[in-house]
Each structure stands twice: as structure tokens, then as C-alpha cells.
Figure 1 (cartoon, one colour):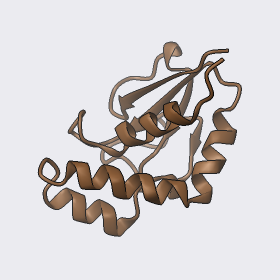
Figure 2 (tube, one colour; figure 1 turned 90 degrees about the horizontal axis):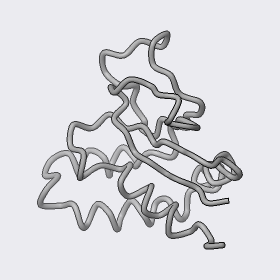
Figure 3 (cartoon, rainbow, N blue to C red; figure 1 turned 45 degrees about the horizontal axis):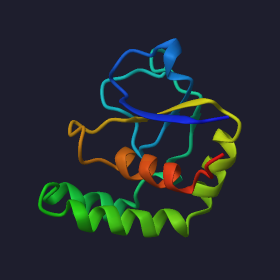
Figure 4 (cartoon, helix red, strand yellow; figure 1 turned 120 degrees about the vertical axis):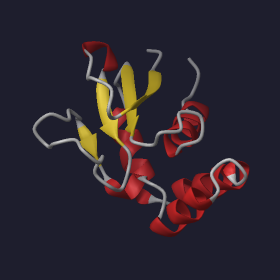
Length: 122
């Protein structure tokens, strides 16, 4: 079974096409209520460390490549990453939800790319 992993801003409406919805940020999305924001799984520990997040937010475009590498290293040594892989095992469609305004430079992009790279081809 081929697995599709998409990314989507948490502020976009939920869709049945999203599949298994995973919120991947450490902080709750500003302005969204617990009653209206739909997700299937959330482990704050899958997010970048507070130190890395604060460092990256200071200069997101100029530090993107360094952020990617540092976040990958955090993920590879993080038990939450193994838990995430177990949680999505057998799911045909997964959507990673993030709250950043920048759609090209955020932790969901790095996490999706790493998950896709680690998924064995059939």
C-alpha cells in the first residue's frame, strides 16, 4: 500500500480527504478552539525543541538549510519520531498539520520529507 503524506496549515478546514490528521507543533494554534480544531493525534514532542524553534524564528529564510539539518538530527534521536511512524503505519493518507504562516519553510516540510525518505518502496 502506497502511503500519501500531505501537509496543511492547521487553520484550513478539515476535509475527509485529509485522512489521519496529525498536529505537529509544540504550541496550540493561536485562535483555534479545542472544539473546532480536528486532529487525530498530537504529540508535542515531535515538534522542534523550543531552543531550535526560537532560533529559527529569528531568521527563517536565512537559516532554513541549517534548521532542516538540525531538526532532522533532533527527529532521528527522538522517541516521538518512532511513535509517529508507528501511529501512521498502515494509514493510506496522512496529513501533517502545522500553524506557521510560511508554507515553504516550516517543520512540517522537514518532517514529511524525512517520513517519505524512510518509507520503504514496495
